[in-house]
Length: 138
Image (cartoon, rainbow, N blue to C red; front, side):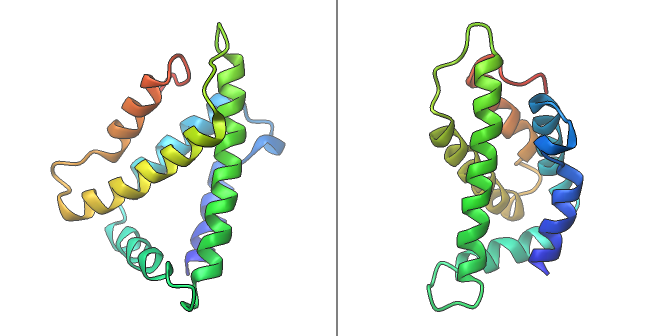
């Protein structure tokens, strides 16, 4: 089920081979975070299974290891491209910021599930991105 979700999200997100600019890809990623707020059941399933999959014996362990590796690689590429295009270029480490962004989104999912009226995942991600400098026009 989660693999299928990744396929659908991947189709919605696109990538550098689709001719989308880094800014367009970032806008789609932020929209995806906002879209998660309309799917509490799926977000809850993801949070539950991803936590359980930390156990190396869990059947979804390898899936999540590979998923996070892919997400970190894609996010680092995207952020690196945005950092280079800024004027002046930003000196952030794209790998470190990608890891931070993914951790932020994962933590926000849990907080939002627990207290949805108090947690706006989209706004929190935009605030994080704006703190990096002129990276996002979201």
